[in-house]
Length: 461
Image 1 (cartoon, rainbow, N blue to C red):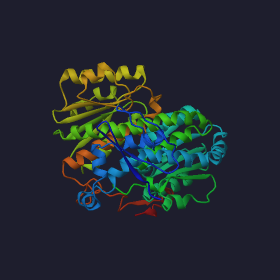
Image 2: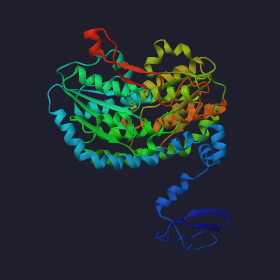
Image 3: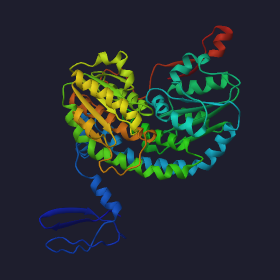
Image 4: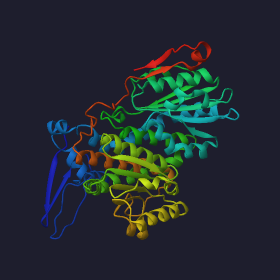
C-alpha cells in the first residue's frame, strides 16, 4: 500500500513527512503552539534528512528520458543507493557466517597457509582495502595479486605444497581472467581453498564455483551488480563483505562498529556532493589521490574512477603520503587536483599533515582536497576544500573501516567531472575503448604450454 503524504505547516515553516501506517504518533510543540497528531519514528526522520536536496539527488530525481540522454540513468543512483545496500550485505553475510566460519576453519588449521586476494581492476583494489584486516585477524600472510597478473605469470604467484586461500572478488564474474585465475590456481597448487565474493548470481565465476569442494561462494544482493560502466556500489559492498569475512569468528565485534560505518557513509552522501560539484567546476586535467594503510586501496580505486568516468580526459595517479615525495610529486602542476584521504590515527596523520603542508608551501596544484574524519584546524587551514564524514565527532571509526566511506568522495569526483566535461557517466567511452566487462581476451593454459609449447585457450570473451 502506498505511503500517505502528510503536510504540516507550523510557524511559517513547510514541514513535509512521509508517514507509514502503524507508526507511533509523536507530539511536537511549536511556537505558536501546535500539536501534530501524526508523527514519525527516528528512522523516518533519518530518511527525511537523507531526502535533503543535494547535487547528487538533483541527478537521481530527474526524469528518465533526461537521464538516458545524458548517460545518468544508473551511475548517480548506484552511488546514492550503496549505503542502503551495505545493510543488506551485512544481513546476507550474517546468514552465511556459520558455514563460512566452518569453511575457513578447515583452511586455517593447516600449517603455513597463505591468502591471496584477487580481482581485475576495481575488484583487485578491494584487496588493498582489506588485506591488513585479514592479516591481523587471521594472523596469516596476505598478498594481493590481480587476476591479470595471475594468468600471465602464474609461476611467480603460486607456490605448490603451501596451502592457499584464494579470495576472488568479481562484480559480474564474467571476465575471462576471473575464470582463468581460479583454474590456473588449481593447476599449480594442490591445496587451494577458494572463496568467491560476487554481485552476479548468474556469472560464470559463480557457476564455476558451484558444488566444487574447497570452494565457498558468497553472492551479494543483485542491486550491487552495477549497470553503469564504473564499479561503485559493487566495490563498497564487496569491501563490506570482506571486512565481515575478516571478523567471521568475532562478528559481534564488527557488528558494534558497523553502525558507525553506515552513518559515516550517509554523512558522506549528504555532505560531499555539493562540495565535489564545486570542485569539479575547476579547470583541472590531472589528479593525484593519496592514502595510507587500507586507504591506499581507496586512493587507487578513486584514481581509476575519475580516469574511466572522464574517458581518460583527466589523467590520474595515486600514492601514499610519504611516497609522493619520491618522484611522483613531479606530476603536480597548476592544473592538478590533489585529494588526500586522511588517517584517523594520530601517528599516521602526522605524515599526512607533513606532506600536505609541504604541498601548500611549494604552492603547487590547482586545489587541495582533504577527506576524512575530523580533519582538525591545522589541516583545514592548508586545504582548499574539506570533506568531513563525521562533523559531529561522535563516530567510532578507525582506518581499517573507512575505505567504503571515503571512496564515495572519489566516486563523486569521477561522476561530477565526467558531467563537467560533457561525458556520459554510464557509458563515458564514446569510442568504445573500455567496456563494463572486458572483450577480446583469451586466457591460455600455462601448464599445457610448458609441457607441449601449445597455446590452449581455457577462458575467453
